[in-house]
Length: 548
Ligand SMILES: [Zn+2]
Ligand SMILES: [Zn+2]
Image (cartoon, rainbow, N blue to C red; front, side):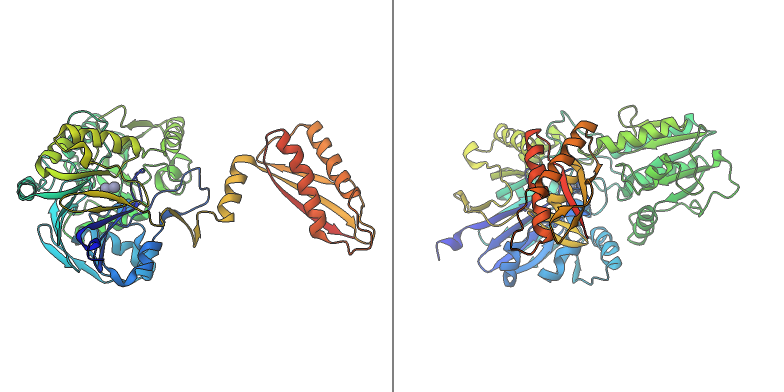
């Protein structure tokens, strides 16, 4: 036992091999702290699912050790799972005022009360044997921090999500002095975000997006402007409000989350709303005097922008007098829905301006040169790339080598992996239970039938087989009816399927037995499946039996 105490365990429950559902546990002796607790967004692989969260089995099994959850910042991929897991864990949550305010918006709706502990940038919070220093970093929203976690045997530096914006909107750049200081005292392990490792050079300052947006105001003075951005990007929203005020336009906030975040941002002092700039509705304002600030940059089906593109958004009817700006970029996986919305907006006659055409967006994540600078300042003994798909992690690990980390001291963690780290070694230990938990009003686990059914329905369509059966004699009373949805079948194939069903029922042998529905159902399924498998087609088959 004593030997084990000499290493800190780092346990990856999410956020590695993927961009989403960030969650890492750090354990020493009888204490565990959790860094971030985020969601992943569902895609075509999980139809009808609201959210995907990390499997926290390991934490619930060790609940009496868990001392707290530390949040690097308020993005969904870092805080979005709290509402689903906090009742199981019931531990304090540490974050900056902005992060906790963003969390609170979500928890209030669900009537969840948590033990939230505010930590200001630059302060240190203690949980069990860990001291966690919150270090200000720049990102696309306020209140973002990196963590220097002092454990009994060494310091772990967690980069959080960051970029190095030397001219941030709030004039509070990343605290590079403090990071250099921590690095010079010796960092045992660094966990570094890898999102933009493929992008060369240095990311643009948030101000660049402001300039791009202002150019659009200057060159489109008569039209109505509709600008979509992430509600959580308070600096972007701030710049748009300032520019609107400069150009004498009123702002209509569209979408519940946009209204909520503007209110919340002003409350915590991270957003300054120019006087009287926001109006409830356009009223009699001419187009030249208004802008609409909307959500829906990812093509989300119910969002303001998507509904506008479909002509289903109350009073805002998009037409040729509109300029729509997407001040955002599609999150990988969302491209199709985003371009769908853009196509529909063009069809309505609007002028659409989006990232690939104009400087209306900048990324919140460090590019290659910024990542290198961070590595040189932190100078870790051991390094693990996080917050990225495998290729991002791989490239980041190669970069760390070039920046002087011994290649033997670098590992690419995957979900469920546990590493034991001390000043001398970093060793892979046996895995813990980890993976995806699907949220759909009720919590579903990975192998759930519902997910499988939905996947099958969306990929393969379904076939409803209606039969009326004389239950006394086990014979069909009329030819079966077949309904096909979500796939196509030629008239010949349909006829042959009917024959298969008739044959299946005719050959059922009920002699001396009660005729039961489940045997008929099974027979229909089995016989049709055999045929479909031959054609390499796998629709869901749903027999409906009328008893006569
Ligand atoms: Zn982020
Ligand atoms: Zn993130």
